[in-house]
Length: 208
Image (cartoon, rainbow, N blue to C red):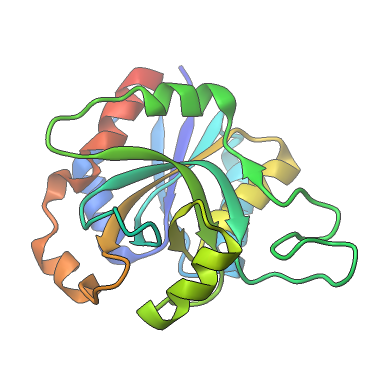
C-alpha cells in the first residue's frame, strides 16, 4: 500500500480535510503552520519520520486568475515563489541553485487533472507562493510577474522545494477561498461545506 502524507497550514483547513478524509488507510494528515519556514519544517519532519511515497499539499488559496471563484479547486502543475530575489544571474522567484519552477510529479498530476467531480470546478496550472498575505492591491504586480498564475498561497513553494531536495513526489491541491478582486476570505470559513475537499478524497481513492 502506498503511504501518502497530506499536509495543511491552518487548523480550520485541518478540520475540513480531516472530516473529508476520515480514516483512509495509508493516508496521514499533518498540520504545519503558516508560511515557508513552518512548511519546510513540517515537510522535512514527515519525510524523515515516515518516508512517504508522496506528499500532497492542500488547503485554501487566493485567486490570481480572475476567472476563478470561491470553491473552485486548482491543482498545481508547477509551483513558483513570487517573493524571492537572489540577485544578478537568477530570475525573479528563483532560489539560486534551484529551478524557477518546481514541477509536480508527472504521474500524480496526470491522474489529478483527469478527475471529474460533480459541482466542483478543477483547473490545472501555475501556483505561486510566498510569505505574504495577498490583497487586491498586490494583484497587478503578481499578474505582471506571472501572467499564467492561477492562485497564490504561503506554503506550496516551500513544500515543493523541500520535496524536490528529498526526491519525494509532490502535488498541491487548493480550494479558492476568495475571488481575485473581492475580499470574501472571511466569509469562506462560514460558508465552506465539508465537501469542499471532496476532489482530494476522490483523488486519494485513485492512488491507494
